[in-house]
Image (cartoon, rainbow, N blue to C red; front, side):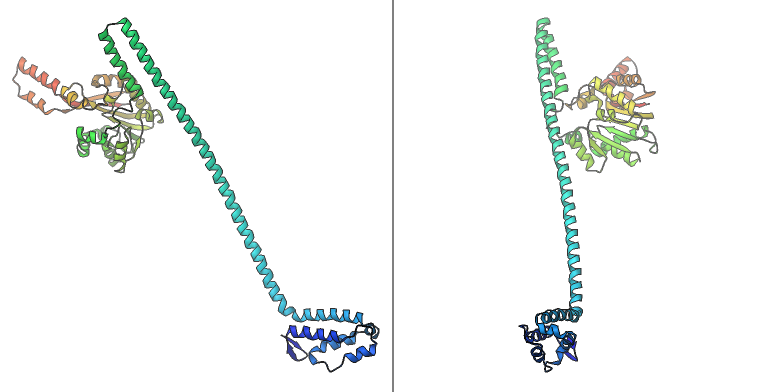
Length: 416
C-alpha cells in the first residue's frame, strides 16, 4: 500500500490512475489551450504527483502533444518504480538468494554424483583386473593339471617298460616282487592323496589312538622337553591331529601353531579355538625363517614318510630351529611286535616303521648337538619278567617277552 497525498492506495490503483491521466492528454496536435483544459483540477488528490509533472513541462512541449506523452510516461514509470521499490526489492532479494542456494545445491549434487560415478568406475576397473587375474590363474591351474596327467601317463609308460625289461632279464618271481615295489612307489608319488580319501580320520584316530583326554595324558610328559615358555620363538606341531598337544602347549604359555594335512582334523581342532592350519608340514618348514622356532613336535608322523621325506623333515627342522631349540619326535616302536601288529598295520596310510637307532643316527648326521632316545609305554606283560625264575630259561622267556611286547613307542628329543 502507498501513502499518496494523505490517502492510502495500492500500487495497482496508482498505476491505473496514471494511465487514466495519460488517456486524457490529446496527442493529436490540439492547441495548448485544449490540453490545459483537459487537465482539470477536478482530478482526485491521489494523482497530486501528476500536477508536479505538469508544472515541469514547457508550454511548447505541451503544444506538441507526443513529447509530453513520452516524458509523462517515463516520469510515471520512475515514480512507480520508486514507490514500489520497498515492496519489490525484498522479494527480489529473497528470490535471488533462493536461486543462488538452488544453484549451489544442484552443484553439490552434481559433484557428489560425479564423484560416485568415478568411484564406481574405479571399482569396476578393479573387478575387471581381478577377473582377468582369476582367468589367468584358471588357465595356469588347467595347464598344471594337464602336466600332472602327462607325468602320470609317462610314469605308467615307464613302469610298463620296466616290467617288460625285467621279464626279459630275470625270472618271473623276481618280476612280481619288483612290480609290486614299482606299483607301491607310483602310488606314493602319483596317488598318495587318493589313499584313504573316504575315511573319516578323526573317527579313525578316536578308535585306534584313544580319546582326547587319554592322548593329552600321554603327551603331557613331552611339554617339559621344550624351552621355557618365556623363551622367544614358537613351537610348531606337525601332524597336530585333533590338537591335544597344541592345547597343552598353549595352556603352558607357549606360542604354538598346529599343522595337519587332513581337513577333518583341522576342523576339529579349530572348533576348540586352537591355532591350526591346513597344510604340509615339510613345505611349511621350508618356508620358515631359519632360526625362528624354539620347538618342533611330531607325534605319530614319521611312519607315514618315505626315507628321503624323513631326512628332509629332520633337516628342515634343524634349519628352522634357533640354538637350543628342540625337535621332539614320537613314533611306534618296531622293537615291539605287539605294537606293530596292533597299531602300525592298523593304519593303512603308514609306509614303514622307523627303528629308534635309525632315527637317532639321522638326527646326529643332520647336526643336532644332543640326541636323547627314550622308549615309553611299556606293555603290562613286561611285569611278568620280574616273576620269572633265575637261570637260562627265565632269561630266555624274559627276552621273548621284551621282544614280543616291550615298549610300544619311543621318543627322540634332539637339541640344536
